[in-house]
Length: 367
Image (cartoon, rainbow, N blue to C red; front, top):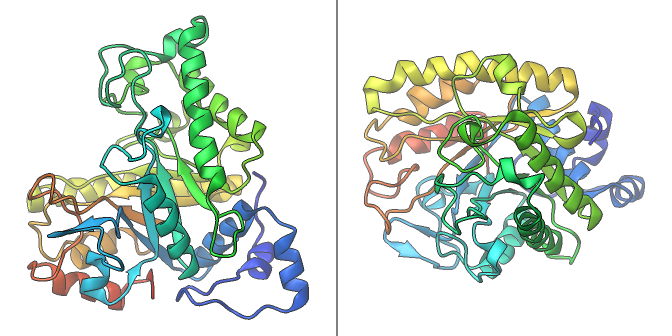
């Protein structure tokens, strides 16, 4: 996707950062109607960056939380702050085998409905994809077999991946807003490829093989005319600029430059977390500016939040001066594991700090 200029961002910003719709004259509306949904989403993200703001994101926010699942309107973020996160993240894992639910048990019909609801309130939707291993049928974390070295010469592996990518494209292309128009989303496939915990990771494929997978994904989406997607590239932590771009598919295939950096070891890991951010995100932002792309902190968080002022004392100072369009933390899956949560819930010791982050930072939440 070509660069979205600041002028286009200004003319196409149909939503304010507070999440409420702005009025638009006929000429603005006509311009918006003539532009792909992905370009309109890029304009909104670009506008947030221009204002020194960023969308705060949370994975599976309205699907489940601490002590509840699938309660209409529920959100741990909203219960603490009074608003929903500005960005909601979802996952397509198991869409490739025509499952009705994803790998975390979230129905795809629910994702489609909630994505439309979130778009209507002025929010942004992002989608990741934890894909099964096409050789073994195991999870994304099954690295007992490496599909990518076989993709070029093994028709069965390639055909399986093509069929799976087509199903993902069909689902994303089917997403509609409340008016029945294509719903713009951020799509972040093949993430954290610089690590080796996924079968598409660095120990299981060459840079050329990874790039071929990315290009195949884009080719299948483009062949189906799917134009409601911004493509996000998001390697993991501790990379030099050269390493980050070693598996970069190319400017024509990517819209968002991101990175995934988690915090570990509670208070003992704070300095390492800050260092990893300062060593990587600034050059990601710099390259995004040079290339006409959008920069983002695509995945982060501290599991269990034993550091109760983590949001105001650790995360916010580390990113406040970076021109990122969004930051997204992972899910509140306490129904799977008691300490598997990334935003405070009512009664948690970090709830007051999270409310301060909501009130005083440049993060965007929506009504």
